[in-house]
Image (cartoon, rainbow, N blue to C red; front, side, top):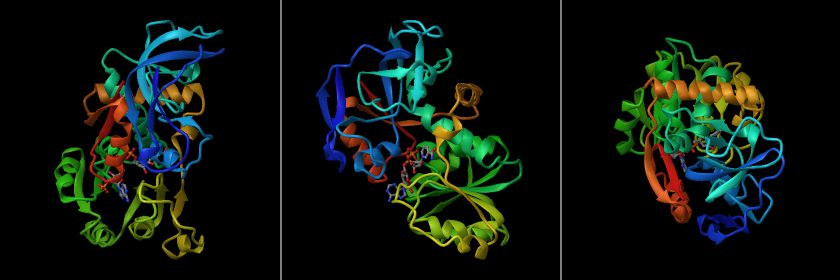
Length: 322
Ligand SMILES: NC(=O)c1ccc[n+]([C@@H]2O[C@H](COP(=O)([O-])OP(=O)(O)OC[C@H]3O[C@@H](n4cnc5c(N)ncnc54)[C@H](OP(=O)(O)O)[C@@H]3O)[C@@H](O)[C@H]2O)c1
């Protein structure tokens, strides 16, 4: 089969389309023939070495498709089932062997492309808004990179939960998109004094929670947006890793809470995974959250997909088609 592989960490140019042999699925595994593959910012961290993976390696954590072959001891799935996953390395390929207990069956109303675009990003929005800091009706919150993959889903979902969302974007041409996906206020991180604006919008109080997937460039000013005893949810590092800091800063800025969560700790058990996916599929089926697939590329063009993510040119989700 064709698969994107890399044998050294580096820029997008290390990604190469290769012919590889996929072994038969082992015990407890299922071979999924991919129909659509999700691209996520975390893929760039694994490629660059920020999150090291043993090399040489495949890449990609999210895909949808059809069960093609079963390993030993599989009872819940059969050949032909439509499934998706988020969290098994090697998704940038025509097929992948995935542990059966990490696969979710797709309901009829969820297309393969939507599943590939939403499993990782949408389950992330689910746990951030409902479990890391359960957003309450009437709260004003800040969500960075509001026009991005996680951002467009999370802003719609937070609005659906009754929050007033202040979203940030990196260019004026993303403002309307963020607004039409749930944001009441949209601030441009490159031109607005956005932490000051958040204070103004909240009458000087600050917000009870800020969701920050940008990292290095926003970390310090994000803390300035928080109300006393507010929570900083640092869930990503699109601009680079958050610098080391003195815990005393959290006390100085208002007895703040800090968490650095990851999806994989919120979908650890089979039950958590299924409940998170069910909640996501329900909010999509209801129409409250629409999945914007704004970039579709061929699997062979994974390098271009990464270049686009780095250039901050993308909005919503990017899907690779095998
Ligand atoms: N912890 C978890 O469980 C988890 C799970 C999924 C994703 N994440 C994190 O969530 C964030 C969003 O992921 P995503 O896949 O949906 O990506 P994305 O939001 O579609 O893309 C990242 C966005 O970050 C913004 N950005 C700001 N500074 C940047 C810089 N220097 N370089 C590149 N982008 C920059 C850009 O938007 P603007 O130009 O509009 O600012 C860019 O579009 C990432 O940090 C990712 O690692 C975390």
